[in-house]
Amino acid sequence: MAGSRCVVLISGGLDSATTLAIARSQHEHCHALSIDYGQRHRVELEAAARVAHRLGAIEHRTVRIDLGQFGGSALTDPAIAVPETPTTGIPITYVPARNTVFLALALGWAEVLRTGDIYVGINAVDYSGYPDCRPAFITAFEQLAATATQAGVEGTLHFRVHAPLLTRTKADIIRTGLTLGVDYAETISCYQADTTGRACGRCDSCRLRRQGFLDAGVPDPTRYRS
Amino acid sequence: MAGSRCVVLISGGLDSATTLAIARSQHEHCHALSIDYGQRHRVELEAAARVAHRLGAIEHRTVRIDLGQFGGSALTDPAIAVPETPTTGIPITYVPARNTVFLALALGWAEVLRTGDIYVGINAVDYSGYPDCRPAFITAFEQLAATATQAGVEGTLHFRVHAPLLTRTKADIIRTGLTLGVDYAETISCYQADTTGRACGRCDSCRLRRQGFLDAGVPDPTRYRS
Image 1 (cartoon, each protein chain N blue to C red):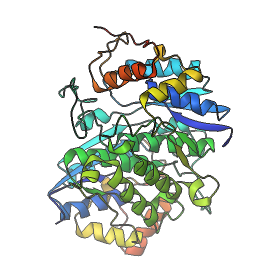
Image 2 (cartoon, helix red, strand yellow; image 1 turned 180 degrees about the horizontal axis):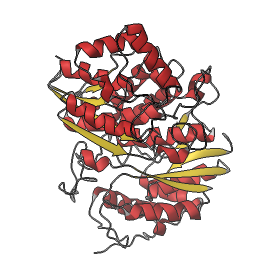
Image 3 (cartoon, rainbow over the protein chains, first blue to last red; image 1 turned 180 degrees about the vertical axis):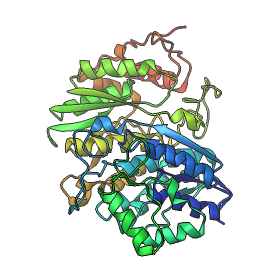
């Protein structure tokens, strides 16, 4: 056990719920952090609160920050449509510097909590199009954390970004989560879920999730609206 | 001229106003960014708006983000007093991971604006106690930016964090700003200015600023409340 406490970034989606379950298996006190960044899928934040409670996080905080005012992403700009067919290259759902902002916030909280362990559910297999979902990004962030913080400079904390899903397939993630007690019916992955949490079934995130349940050979508990 | 546009982080204080003036001398379009992070010195944000306008920023945006909910700093936690006598080591006014969060936000906006040039008024001479005001931090952030962004990974933008004040004394900063037209009467540096913008004259920031005007041999336009 790397230490008794950690910070876990959770969005309310499948990946971060599984990450919290993994973190919870390794740390006694998991402090869950969600970011309300003006995303379209706001029901995710309600899902995040349910997931944090159910999986035994000791607390759950939500930091509000309006990334939408910068524009540039289908997830924060209502003028840009969420794609419903597969695309190549970095998708328009990429939010500039999003994971850098999220990890910076997690880092600040971790330093206050006196822990070096930060968990994030990023995945390089399914989201290979996002630059800030790659191993090189994690390594660069850990190097930054060591120089950016009082605890890092003084050597009292060694910051590690744990990304336990980084190289796993969606099916593997689902199987792992099920063994750790994740109820995926409580999670929302859709980029454009409706206000009751029903998924569109067509966006990238829905397609990957649906295929994951198929590949894992387990029933898909997702509520689709069509 | 490194390019026609840039992003400049401004707080409303002396250093960032000077940084904006320097950026303005090198770029046609300066996009000014302030962060409302729950700081005690909120009048700084009003000063930031005045400074941005007066020094010719093409626009000024303020992102609100509640770092105060994490606690751990005299600048965001009302339960922790701002020191009024010199201290050794990293001061209690240090806000965990603050400059990492600020630069991450500037990075996101810069990517949307299609510029790699980010200016920040951090200084390693006066604030040697802050870990995220050192050259090593800037270098680590530039390395992160190259891997964290679509434009960095694709090689269409080369992100540079310009910290033109990094190794300058306060007196040198003031002299430089005066030649570039900065009106320091409009800036607020005090950690606990009152609601009309009058400075306490006693906190670290006030002491450094006052000494800077003395050393520069120019009149100090700061309004002190005592």
